[in-house]
Amino acid sequence: MRYVEDALKGSQLAGARLIRLLEEGDPEGIEALKGLYPHTGRAYLLGITGPPGAGKSTLVDRIIGELRSRGKTVGVVAVDPSSPFSGGAILGDRVRMQRHATDEGVFVRSMATRGHLGGLSRATGEAVLVLDAMGYDVVLVETVGVGQDEVEVVDLAHTTAVVSLPGLGDDIQAMKAGILEIGDVFIVNKADKPGADEVVKQLTVMLEMRHTPPGDWQPRVLRTVAVKSEGIPELVDACLAHREHLVSSGKLSDRMALREVHFFRQLVKELAAEKIFGGVEGNPDYAALLRDLEARRVDPYSAAERLVASLHCRF
Image (cartoon, rainbow, N blue to C red; front, side):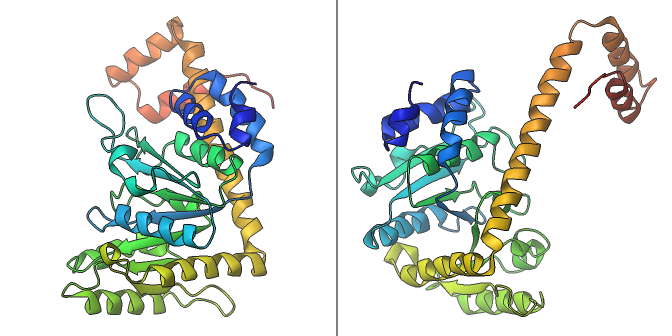
């Protein structure tokens, strides 16, 4: 099959074309991914998330450098906001991490959220599978940084690193019910700025309130100044230590199993919706249901129940 063999050999050209096909929902890309899937499950998946302006891209750039110095190959999926005009990523890999552009051990791919609320589209998970099959030791996923809604990365990554920065103040309190609960490693970036000590203190106190059971991973709070490459080795050490904890405790296989089930269920929902709406298009009963909905003669819940009840499906 076109691209599969080359991708398994690590061809970045083949990988880039495959990811493009998957982003476009091209059936050829799906068929290729089926061929690649048996060769996935070997890469270490590290998610980097946090609010806009936290310096996530610079951190990822420095993490790449540190991992390369340790002999690791690195794939990166950088998720950017969608352009309101083209639907594509506003920022591209041409303006990110350019110092790694000539390194054959690094492959950076930017992707758009395409309006997906959790910040990660289906194509993001598919791109991670492609990079995994290409043989990269570590696959980094940098999220778009939209805030509290952006928690889906925890369903994708083995380790989730949450980036914060001085100056957020009460925003950290507001974040605790969401994004702060998903972190395995917490990073206070721009730690040379005033207020860094207070952010570290707040994070530490909130993590202590989580009452981690004995033997479970205790999330760590680290300081970095990414633009000066300060704290990066310690950050990579902490992430790798979390991975070792997952391996030694048997939780890595549990996380991978949950990830596969989550991806499967997400896929079923999308495919089922496409099949359902494709099947009723032009149906007079469906048209009448929509008219009732528009006229408020039926509520959306009852309309959905009637549509689903009309389906005849056996597994």
